[in-house]
Amino acid sequence: YCHHERIDGLGYPRNLKEHEIPYFAKVVAITDAYDAITSSRCYDDGRASMVALDIIYKCKGTQFDDELAVEFIKCIGVYPPGSLVELNNGEVGIVIETHENNKLKPRILLVLDQEKKDRVQKVIDLNMNIKDDMGNILRISRELINGQYGIYLEEYVKRGLLLGKSSESDS
Image 1 (tube, rainbow, N blue to C red):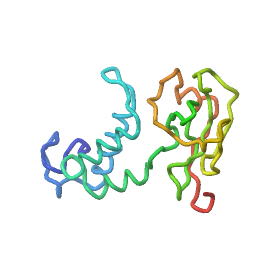
Image 2: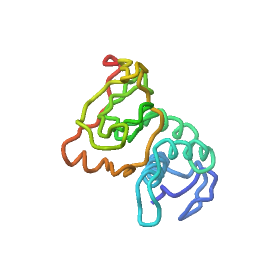
Image 3: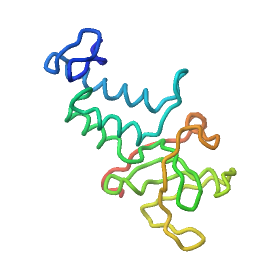
Image 4: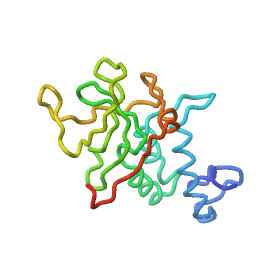
């Protein structure tokens, strides 16, 4: 009932002040906003996780609780499992697991080749400094929007793709 209330008192339905908003409503407000931004709806296309996290960060202290917003961003990470990414060699993959100590180098299921055509799926771990055919270390060049190049995360999950987060000792 209160997750659309805002820290600055401009929310709805009751225009509650920060101290009047229940703690869990503050948590739900952030997660609801993240879900709304990253999911395709009838009125808007979903956007990349990084866009959602940037919006949440910019709205901390006005729409969202400062500390909870920062903790949420830390929890989600740079490329959370399920992110669709393009590598510096042009291949496209799905982040399937992150490393607690190196969030910029997750494990990825490669699904498209450099020409954006289906490829034999292969899991790579960027934390292992894997190189491409030219000898360049593979890295993520950008996050893509779910559905880009015809890749929909939901289809992979329905087929059994498991997403997770490594423990600190695994990285």
